[in-house]
Length: 302
Image 1 (cartoon, one colour):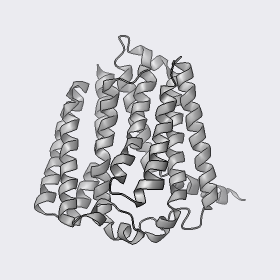
Image 2 (cartoon, rainbow, N blue to C red):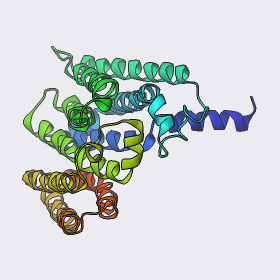
Image 3 (cartoon, rainbow, N blue to C red):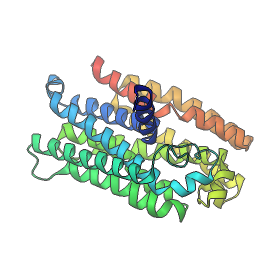
Image 4 (cartoon, helix red, strand yellow):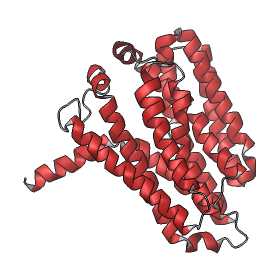
């Protein structure tokens, strides 16, 4: 195998893990860690815990990337049917399905090992971080991918707990226990997911219908779908503002981005089209990352 072939294989496996997904989730874990570190009376204590920080990044990266690789294996048949996904590594023939499964299992196993190392380093009586990692993997792979995704409209909502786990893992790894603020920050991610994914599914409604996936627009009318997308976006903005205690920079950012989301949601309600829904999707895509950046800045400047 020449260097070009090796590079191509690495690129295919990297694509298999859906980097756009796990990069964002790893970032939420980092942001939550930094926020949790800001709660100490001696804030420098957070920066001293470099081993925990590295382990969290490794565990969340392996966990999310591994989950996506296994999910690609589970969805190989429907991915081949959908225009949006037919060129993914498995349906396009670039990676064998069984190799994707093995690769995903290895990464997921490493994620659990790294999570346990966090609990061990924290001298935790209960392996809290390990439990959160296992729960996240179970929710995404079993509850969402293997069962609900093809059966029930609640798939995105009940499967959304997995998306909230990286932030909670990051916060808990530093605080050494599950606390209210950590739960609220992870809830922000959980609430963001439906509005974001439903907007995407409306854009590719025909794809989901062809594959028999009961996403929102394939189950209810266009008007109802748009109303629910707009409502979920409004709930997201309201909830983000309820976390005002995080800091001034965060609050200002939440207000500005919230106004943009609300304006886009209002335009969607007044002009209920797939094009408007897609614009809301594009606007909401960086929304979560922007809020977490503001959260980090608030900690670093105080």
